[in-house]
Amino acid sequence: MVTEILGQSIGLGIVGISAIVIVMIFLKGWAMWDSARNNKKAWFIALLILNTAGILPAIYLIWFRRKR
Figure 1 (cartoon, rainbow, N blue to C red):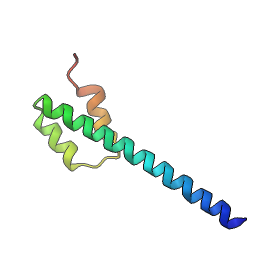
Figure 2: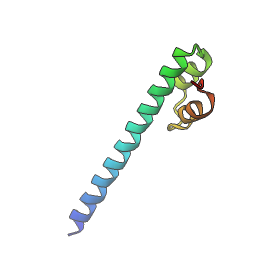
Figure 3: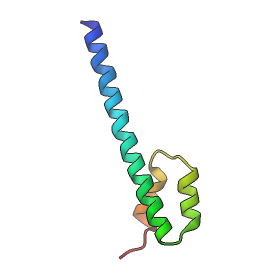
Figure 4: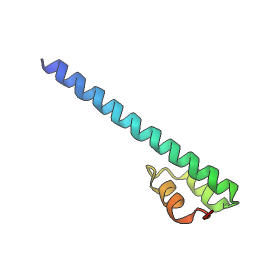
């Protein structure tokens, strides 16, 4: 009984972390791609070097993207 509950908790943790990692990779890739297309080298380098759990890519995509 206890091992089943523990196994389910670990499984949910792995699924949750995996989902967060996938979202972070997507945001980072999208922000880097957009900054490279718009010749924003400083943003590209910052996004490449800094791992901010998706915060910096989200900031770039929300406030600093070129409006089309």
